[in-house]
Length: 223
Length: 144
Image (cartoon, rainbow over all chains, first blue to last red; front, side, top):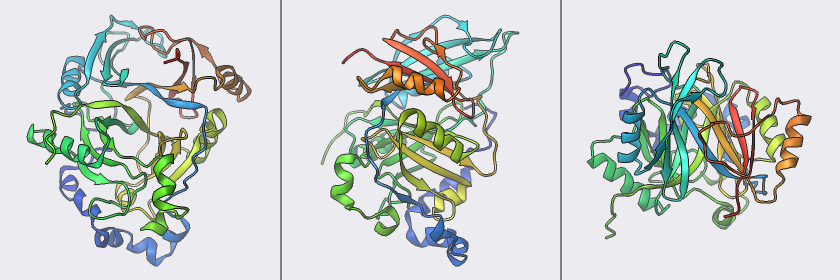
């Protein structure tokens, strides 16, 4: 892991207690002040269930900065089961004059070159250190896409020595896995070697199952 | 009992990135792409958000609960130094020209072509920056 730890990384002690968010009493304790002041009821965490077509089909590609392509490639191969497609020669940085980048393209089973690991070089040739502050996380869908698949994925990685920083949880309010969030996706999160937070997920609510499961009730009404 | 072989990932499913002004970014993404605001996780009503000092606004492309999510960190400042870009692939026949026209009407600086010179070719591509200067590449893919 990179020595420079971004400020949004969950401290190790907090990671140990993250599982408490699956307990309703703990969530109620954390929310005691906004409950008493009633801000909780004017700033509700809830689903809106609006599923109309947009102009977008899917996220095609994501490029993230890394310090060492070889190190990151190995991590995404070992942990995510991704496949190295190719690593390109250095090319001009598309947004910074005089800078260069080198791109390593990684593929998932059904998604060709969906992740690009990028080394960034300043005009003197020094490689940049990723800040960790452009995105909170990105999510890769686990093969099978069911609750039990994500749990099995988490168990396999744990047995291989890769510990999640959070999860597995389910992002709804249903025990025993629900953490009070929204989306319905089962998820576990791991930091890559540059402290980029990667969610491994499955079973997210869709337009097909949302209304069948919940009707018109919103998230706060389902808790 | 189900026995799993080593499980891999099938696809990039969603992306959750930082913004500085949720309302401004929300207007940007809904106006440019017709994205649907699908959920809110607020630190006054979510224990996880309260502990992490964040607020999350979720958007759907029209099938999953969320595909992108805008996050405001209430204590830390975001930057553009850990992500270079992300790509949004338009639906077939959804109107590449229409989105491009919207981008121009919104006063965005439009650059034609792919973000990465080494990326594989697509039918058409252009890129713009959102209000936080995140680079978004918009592509029209070949029919699958």
